Image 1: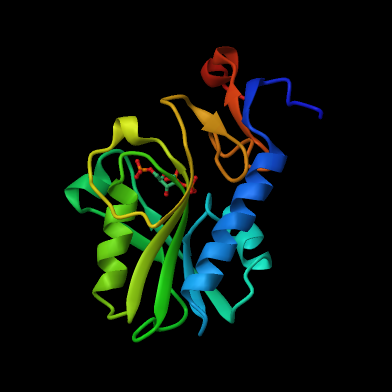
Image 2: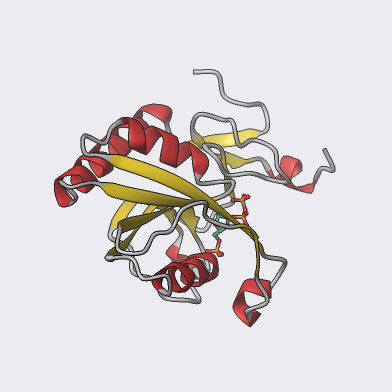
Length: 181
Ligand code: PRP
């Protein structure tokens, strides 16, 4: 496999991601025989979402939300929804799909926001869990991988909007983190 020159190492390979996501899709399919509506927060979660839905065997649909979160804005509650859901989720079985939970502040905000709209059920699927930095506690029912306190990119995760397209989860070289590119 060709590894990006800015990557120090591959933390989770494409094959491991694929296998784990297939398993999560099987679990979700088993839990929601009547169908499920997935909600993803732009932009990072898109890669996980699109691979996840490809493996679902139950009726499904999905929608997107985007929020602006500068610095501690999420914590202080000064969050702006820059793109809201297109469809109502009232009375539906909803699963929030996120690429990573770090401090947990984003997920906590989204969870509360969605919960207020009256879904029938609400669960969370997260590809990567980095528990060391957790501030807000959030219930996670479907979890891909626990990862150590490293800065990771790829499979939707970025460094200054770059590297999202890498097919694996990689650790950046420190030079890449300090560069201006
Ligand atoms: C990332 C990720 C989560 C959030 C997790 O989004 O997609 O939404 O950070 O961090 P937290 O647990 O500390 O809140 P980001 O704000 O980088 O936007 P992006 O998805 O567009 O990359």
